[in-house]
Image (cartoon, rainbow over all chains, first blue to last red; front, side, top):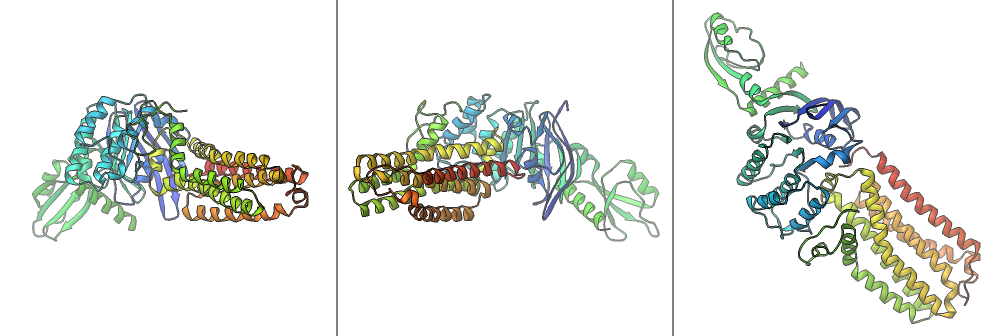
Amino acid sequence: MNGLSVHFERVSKVYPHFTLDDISLELPTGTIMGLIGANGAGKSTTIRILMGLVHQDQGRVHVLGRDMPGEQAAAKRDIGFVSEDMRLYGSATLAWHMKFIQSIYPQWDQPYAETLLGRFDLKPQQKIKGLSHGQRVKAALLLALARRTRLLVLDEPTTGLDPVARQEVLGELMAVLADEDRTILFSSHNTLDVEQISDQITFIDRGRIIASDDKERFLDRWRRLRLALLPEAVLPRLPGVVEVGGSGRLPVLVTNRFDPAMVSACNDAGATVQAVDPMTLEEIFVANVHSRRENLTL
Amino acid sequence: MLPTCTAEGKTSPYELRDGEATHFERLVLATLGDSRLSLAGIVATLGIIATGGKVAFLIGLILLITVIISIGAQMAVSPIVTERKEQTLSFVMSLPISYREYTACKVWGNLIIFLVPWLTMLLGSFGLLLLSPGSRGLLPYAAIMSTEILLSTCLILAVALITESQGWTVAAIMVGNLGVNGIGYVVAHIAGIAKGMWGPTIQWSGAASAVLGVEFSTIALLLGLAFFVQAKKKDFL
């Protein structure tokens, strides 16, 4: 368990209309993992199991060396958690919440909390029910960040935020990343947000993890190849092709194992490589999902 | 108990000055703040009873029961059902507490807070009965009915905790309220209790002890059931 902040071993959870199936996940200490999936893919269930708020039916979960859900109370002393559906007490002020959290977490960093108040433009005496959605998210983030916990778990924190608030939140998260001992799990269906701050990416779809790797490796290995086939030439067999599109003489391939040697292999086979396009994380995610779903239906 | 927690301002019951209250005291004060009207109702009702007479006593008793049941219902609905409805539960459960601690906090916190108006009612009723020489025979009946109200509150609390559903909790409030009225009628007609009920002296019978025993056993059963079901829950959000 050394070096791992989060470790899922073959975790499953069955609901009447959804199954989280055989999830294995490792999150090394000091890394920022982006958990990307469509709505209903299983991100929140995975995170709730991680937090000990939902019990897995099968498999083992270790968080900061603690067995979950059995040792959830001890583990949560070192976890800052914010989820999209989390609400603070509407009748109380942000100052009340800050004092409340401060009384529970001895490592609470009051100067940092006050800095965040300024950066997020929050007023401590304002009641939570008077805050906008963006301000509420920022207030919840402030309460999580100033705890100075070893693990931050953020479930869709940027959902519903306007572009300015989103950038403020992401900017603060990036500042937090300067601390190499802190580990962050960040879930979102917005790949742009995840791409900005994560160094590890995990794709989840229909309750299963379909890919998990370093962000850079994803971006390096996924390419779209635009080919032009000579008359009577056939499409060369290339490694890692997950999608074939385009027209008959102008095919477009998507590969997850791109190697520059592929270009010469194509030329040798009578297929001119007109362009090798890098792919965005969103394109990689969508291609991954389509590829897996097609394989399942075959 | 958690360390002292403070906030500035005093515009809401949550907001207390530095060093003024612990979390527990804050919770009690907040709930009492919300229940000020109810407490005023108890005192006013005791005043009606104090005027003497059978009609005044019956009217006062009905009002008293209504006020106390309302307080019990409010305490169950406000911090338990509303917590899920308003999505503050995920905030609470993100803190370093277990399900067992959450349940214990809700059960004991609510009960202790409820005991403030309940004991006010109990001691007030006993005081009035003892000060009215002609009504002392009602004391066993008052003890049974007070315990029945406590039982009704525990029923509402247990249902609210187990189901976390507003619908089921409202149903429990109705059952609890009907139960108090029904039990009140039945107990008043039990021979061993009815015999000296309107007399000038306290006549504690075996029947009264048996009814109280059943009531306290049911309270223990309901609270035990709430803890048991909570411990078995697999999904807390």
